[in-house]
Figure 1 (tube, rainbow, N blue to C red):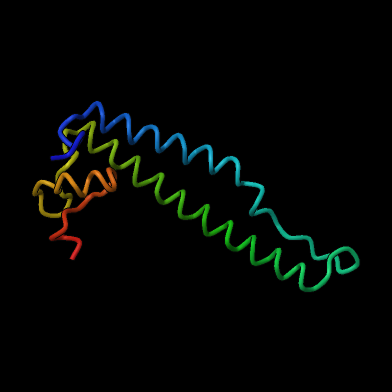
Figure 2: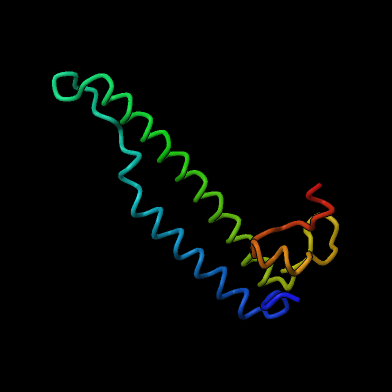
Length: 113
């Protein structure tokens, strides 16, 4: 049995803490996706390519964090609406172990297949 899937306060705490961590990561990494300077006199071609690759990776990481943040917001909404722990597609109870792995998961294993 899950340690918090039936305890809304604990679920809210876990989701809120994760959301706060994500917001901090998003604010800390915002400069990583700034435009890369293309001044050839200051930076060599390989250095620019490396900087562009790092910028692309930073943008992708930021996109993933924003997606996870939205998932957490939706899970918190489900908590507010007393729908947390139930599949948004079929309405069945989500397996507690699945919620332990990812408390923001919106669907059961059957619907995920």
